[in-house]
Amino acid sequence: MAITLQNPPLFYTIDTALQLVSMLIALLIVGFGYKAYRFTKDKRYYYYSVAFALIAAAFFVKALSNVIIYYIVPSPAANFLPVFNWGIFAYRILMMLAFTGIMLMTLKITDRRVVLLLLVFALFSAIASEDHNTAFYILYIIILGATSTQLYLNYKLKKSRLGLATFGIFAMLTVAQALFLALILDFYFKIGLGALLYYAGQAFQITSFLLLFYVMIRISRR
Amino acid sequence: MAERRDRITIIYDILSAIAAKSGRIKPTHLLYKSNLSHISMKKYIEELKGKKLIDEEHVKEHLFYKLTDEGIKFLNDYKKIREFTESFGL
Image 1 (cartoon, rainbow over the protein chains, first blue to last red):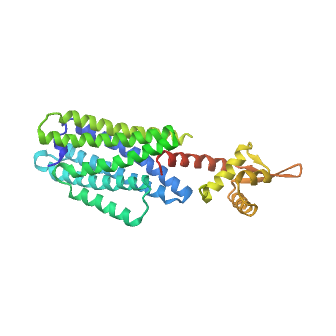
Image 2: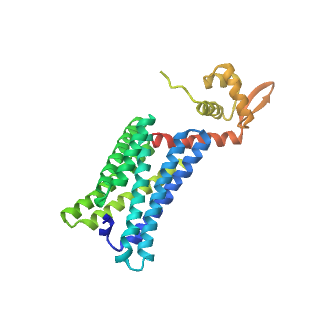
Image 3: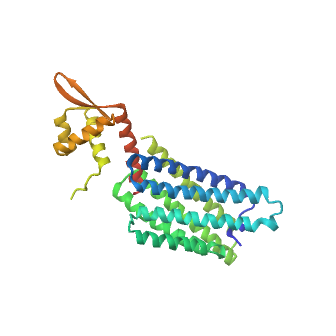
């Protein structure tokens, strides 16, 4: 069973829309990163672009699985789970690879053996994470937390507003995943805050992507 | 110790030095501002002229290097990439 089975039912359409908006914003970074790579021939930009392409693909897959469940599958009770589980499975792998890559670049880890090892760990945890995605969210929070911490240090060093906003993006994404993890705990302990946690998590996630959009607009207008 | 500049940063520094002088600079000033040896600067100048990022201009027997529209576009694009790099801690 997947965690989103507890989502507020009416949220699927909004959920899908938010995922598509996030996907478009991620594609903006893909374009900018690739342009920067073409300009400088610096592979950092190419890999950053690839990481955001994976994020865009993850949102697309999730949105697609939502659309299939919500609009196409005639009898949700019978056909819901396989589609949903495959959607979530692909989402987990793509997101984990993308954010592990971003963390490696932000922390400036360049040793190929370490990079490979961390990517394998991330991939394995994404594949093996069953039981409501608990392991996936815990590792996801650790990766985003490490990236946020580094971005905070980067902001302290550079003292730029956009640096602060970028830290804000990753910090909010971390909070969003923590709320999704809390949603799982809520399910286990039957606290009854499920809908609230889900809305709050989605709000943090979309706000972080909108902030990302703002940062990219500011950079493009320079 | 100061960090070693890569090729693209040197090009940016040369073009910025020209831009800072209202888009036109004398070779001696450029040599001083770009912090390069004479031989290195000559190589870069040839490359930049080849890419049409700068142009030569003669005013009363004095040689000037002038920023072209392509050069201004390069500067703007590079500034954006630098801002992106700094903001995302890359």
